[in-house]
Length: 305
Length: 284
Image 1 (cartoon, chains in turn purple, blue):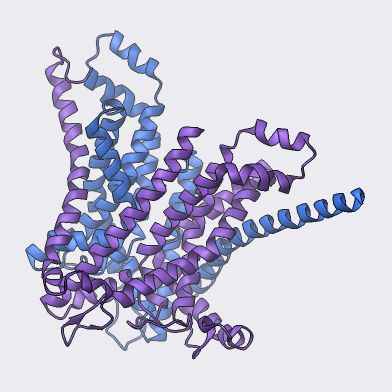
Image 2 (cartoon, one colour):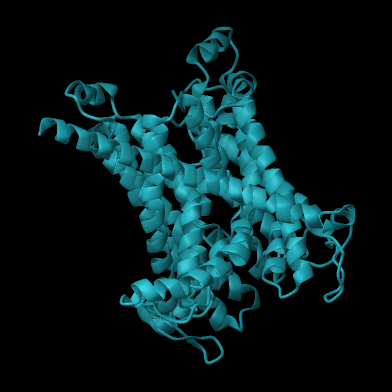
């Protein structure tokens, strides 16, 4: 049908101009990768891949290693998933299996709205509410869980723990919304069969719904992970902005996105700029891989449904 | 024995279901908490002069954020002028001409990839693309970044809504001898118009809340902007600067700015919801 011999002139112009617009996004995606690689070439030439596991970040001395940022991003994202996945999947189960239709719509909308709250506003809440709260709770955690290395150290308030908590809030709506969509695809006959055998609601959820939706829920978690890795403002405001690696969740740290946000506008020279863009390139690579995996898992479930 | 097993199963059932209800309550409660707190903190420092005046010099109390509000309107507006036509056109292309085929697959894939790219990385791209060659921070570079964030959202949304237009409508028009492009532009597009417009509005509101890509593109400004090729203040960015500042007066202003931003986001999202229920969850 396309490119048919008899295609009218107007049709052809119209189709081609639409295709040009569509090509623009393809071009932008390619240009993004190329631009960032090119703009960070000095860093890769000087440090090579060792840039990624270098431990010191000292722009003044011209020594650049990205490990503290990779570590901070990984720790805060993992913490966020640890908190948000049970909460999100739990909410999704409640919304699909239990809540009356109207209540489910209302709660679902409220949770989706959480995704619309700008990151900087969550950061503001983080600075003035979450950080003082975390600072107040930290000595208590040290007293009860202090035998673990994660819960030791001075209670600054700002640090990995605060950043992980605020990230959890930011990815919660994504997990809930996708998990809810996926749980809706569970065929009712499967559930009815189990009810007919005398199962309780929870047993049906555990025995049928969750296993059936498993790959989609994993997909949701990966999608959320992709968001968490690149989340900038709220994390920047509460993570403490210190390029250190420490086992304690109370310690201030740094993340990949945060260092770009903080230092790029006033980068101290070309080497610094190039190193920051190199971190951006690494962040791009990680999020593309994670998102690719997430799509794969969700596509797989959709094909089965 | 049997009775006790049954009782235990019922207890587990009740317990777990209550736990899921608690999860949902916590999730929704967080939103209400945020909205309530911002309304409470923000309302106390909101005033007419806050909306209409320029910021006062550092150290003086008072002043407003009028330049940031106007700046946000300009930057987001320009982003919309660039992003909406491209997003809608490519969405229509995918739905009308690109249901199958290699090119369409690549475009769809690129849109999904771009949608998942962190906004700060998009900002870096705009920085390398616009700021570095021009050697100056500018409203234009901020708009380019925001447009790149909007396009994939609008594209997927438009495609979804154009696909919902029944084939019979197209066939009816084609049977009357209407050229295919006129069918797409004057029959299909208006039919899907409401959904497309809502999607574009949601994308605009998402862009209006972005801060990360603007820090090193639009850069911020404590005065009125000097046109689109100079640095410009935006509402979320000013909010950020005030929030991390050491001045109590600026903290107060940050809450007021948060109230304005949040009220805008809320209005757009609720309006979109009321005006039209999306076919699926959209932006994911």
